[in-house]
Image (cartoon, rainbow, N blue to C red; front, side, top):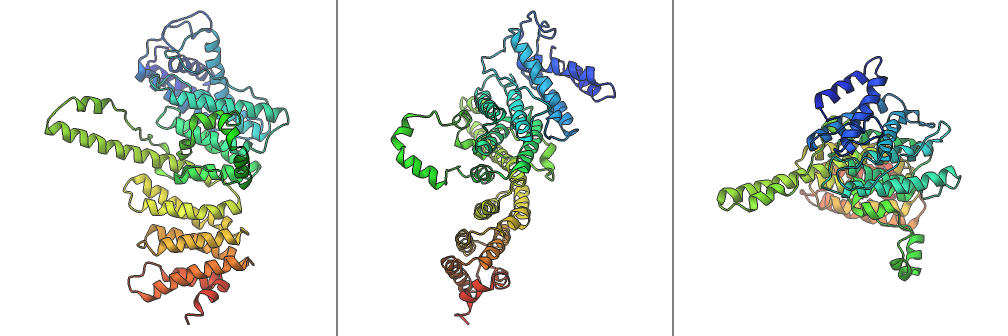
Length: 486
């Protein structure tokens, strides 16, 4: 209970043995005592009576050990209706709550969380909500007492999930449940970044989102949340009905925030820029990039001279590099969620933003940028490209075609051209089937401009293969675009 690293590591090793149930139970109790609570012993739970002399490093180590053990246990069983795979995580959260109930104080004032009770009769969506709520409780630990942003966000998410659970169990699940789950998943991944529960969060969120998508495709708004987490764009409400309601009730909505979820208010729109690392990326089991605080800079600012100036410049540069790598890691994690989404019209609207992201990554030297670019290309050629090609919105396909061809005419050939080619092929399939005359004219005009440039200059940036693909995949568009020139 003093946070001895070797003792906790030994318990974790014993818990993996053939008779590891007792060792695992002891590991849960000791790790909860060290990671969540302060020094003073108190009568109650047997673990809470032991004085804890752990320092910050020992607390972080205890949290990392138990969360790694929980992640290993989670992998051993499928996440499905009934939620049997969540049993170890529920046991851990139960111990945290039991220790809370004995009056054991945490080192720093923080928001308390509660783990939702489970049942073997829970349906799949209830299990999804429970799993995310259990993760939120883990993110309320005491491993970073100097900051309140993570526990505040986790508690806000937990409150939202508990309300959704009550509605679902009462048979009143709302249409916004998919959106709530998407926002909770993204916010929790961001909270868990560079935290002891990072690997547990990656595994749990990925499987919970996959289970949710297996029950029903995500709503358009939920899809948008995940897409924004990948691209880094700010999430906005495109729904026309919502916009009209906002116009009608603008003054009233400015005075009343009761209809905004706690997690949205606490995590904010910026929380949408969080992401998930995929199974096929080498960084999956690596450490998160942690952006350092300003303590070093504060010390350097107090020192004068050329050497100190160089140190400050180097520190700033390293900080920017770490921040960028951390951002890309989070986008990779969100991409893993996007890969599990379905929805043909939503996929069609995702083509342009994802292609633009490929353009953004062209000049980025971070190793995570290359991983993200490679996975984007595979996604555009595979799942999202195939889904988009089955959409029926010819107007959206024409608009996307115009955006991509315009961008191609101003960029050197490279990863963006490859991504754009896959996206244009999907749009061509939609335009070939469509009967929207205006959409056909818009797309033909865009291809005509691209052809004029491609064949009119030796330095043209538009690959001729894109024009050939148009002729083979959407001959109706190619005829309108190219025949007049012939």
